Image 1 (cartoon, rainbow, N blue to C red):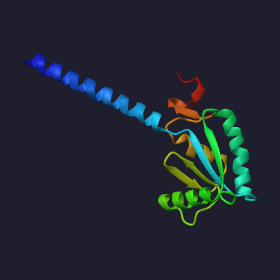
Image 2 (cartoon, rainbow, N blue to C red):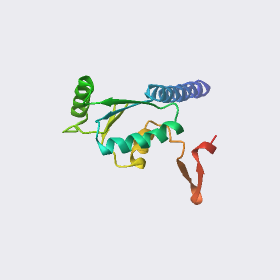
Image 3 (cartoon, rainbow, N blue to C red):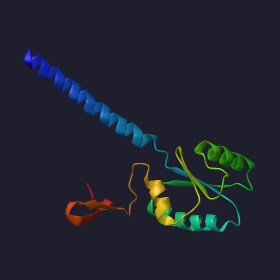
Length: 143
């Protein structure tokens, strides 16, 4: 009887491990690597963000960046309004960044935007990871 309970416990534990691994796999596959950026011609913050994202694109070729001009494209403007309302951001502003279901408005500089992009569960290539005893290593060097 004890062996039977141990066997059942082992099977349950193994199923929990498999379930956890499959949930992680689904979460990483569900992440859309398309960053939608809503901009307006003549907006200085939009221009700064665009210049910054050119560098990010070179470092992260898997990240697809799609720009939407809210002045030239009525559908983009309607999308921006709907996304802003859904995210509780009112009034809508530019630049607005959308990655998956997440929305952030405004460009506060590179580190904030990198943090927004990296919040998909994958660290940015230039990130460092703190290790015990104040050791640091680049994410690229991790196995």
